[in-house]
Length: 372
Image (cartoon, rainbow, N blue to C red):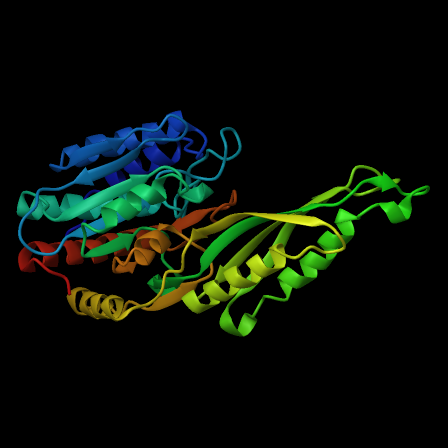
């Protein structure tokens, strides 16, 4: 495969990296989407736009169909920095720096370039669709429903998050849930009527211990109480407290254990207090499967590459497609580091390597009509 002009690749990357597309910046996210609308329409893709008023529109680009398996490419246009905090782009040796260069505008450009090469060779691209969502960095709370609806139409999904060390693909991600546990106590004067109060802060302290005890590191399960709020003044028995906590787990059985235990804890009336629980699973576990292993082995043969793999504790939209039963692999973007910081960077070599990898897969699908 002969690479397109390297300057075009970097020019396209720079165009979208220098657009602030913080999740809350609808105008910026939509501007990124407009670039992809032009680029992919040039390749024969048809756009279904899912308009949103409070976040960027989700974009579903569909290629012409033919017999055989269908592949969904999945990525997000949003980034984590609000306008004015980190909007730079620069090249330094073998690295490119900027917001989204590895998470995940770099991955979007990798897919775009591989599709361009496929179109150039075959005159069209078939059975490869591209879903770009706008709210992944805040949990895909809106787009996950669209993703789940579309997932049933495909045989496999490639997610364009950054590659791991040595180009590793991602075969598993922990599930994550976020909860708020509220404690209602009873206010009283801390000096004159101490015994008449119900100290919500004291109850919350005990709840932190109970929740943390649900952690099982041997199973890859963690429970973290990240935010604590409570009380009104030093001389008042606290009438309320709030715990914001997160769970992460690697298996469905651990998820079910956690949910059952949390429910039991929340139903307890400790020292006369009243507890209320809100929240739930945000993204379910991305688990390995027989179908995933078969797909991975096929890709190794197609690409003539080793394709190492890894499991990650962090989540992505791969959790959503995998938990819907769609055979999913993640990490098709370039290798990089410093994501979510002002030092975010991506390897230029990895950008090119990932384009070659995806093109070899797309080429095989066009000719053989199936991947696994």
